Image (cartoon, rainbow, N blue to C red; front, side):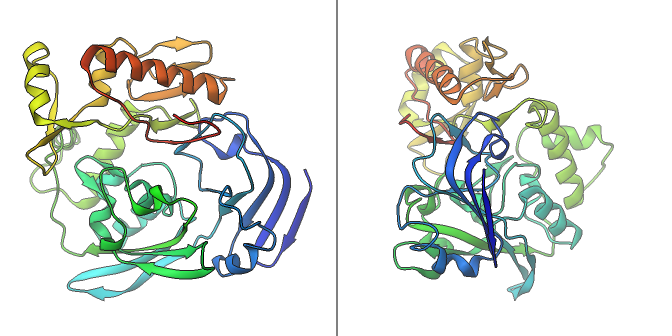
Length: 351
């Protein structure tokens, strides 16, 4: 692997990506460009980086599965600045570069006396990936706290600033996810409350707070600690057992379909979606009911503590993990008539 360094970026040829994806699967790119200063992007595209839609933007690799080699160059944003930028309507505006580690940023905001992101603690990945996936957990979605997304428009070579209404946010979805070759997220500005209103309705949080000995209204940091404890207990640490977190989205189905399912499976969890015509199901429950939790095929497997998490026990390839995921989805479709969709971005092949 050869390396060349310039102001604001570094170029690596024939770079291994094994350590740059949390599944730890083997992958190589002919050209890896690490960017430390987003202002160099207009010069990079069309220069060092070809104006090619196949260029992959890679964060921490916590929401990607390399089922094949990336088709072109790989760009990694290592920009790490963040801080408060102002106030609006009693909320603090906080801006963070795309390369900032998400969990570190959440803890920093809480340390500043700001609330909103506490239910999203310990989600792996970077700030730049948060709006793309519209990350969510324990009854909260990041789109609720986004004030603006800054991005580089690869089609025009210009920087743009998009408000929440322009980002087409939906459940684990956004404009950026649908147009990965158009916009490159460079920073996100959040609007966070100074007065904390806890969100404790999601199953498990109130119980965890009680187990922690918290009486009365908790502080935002205590809610974050409860979420962290739950996640660490349920989800394997990617540093010890490589994984990409939840592999499947919770399926949203017509409400009319749920009646027939509940008649056969009365313990099936149902969640409201904000649309009375639909309901959200628990993908983990469906997969567990099909007997997959703890299953292993060679080094590809399902976590023994959470049916929604696919894991690499050592040397599983991306295609082996993908094959297992497809078999899981097929079994859920056959038993429940419910289609599962993957959450990570799959590189190299179609789902």
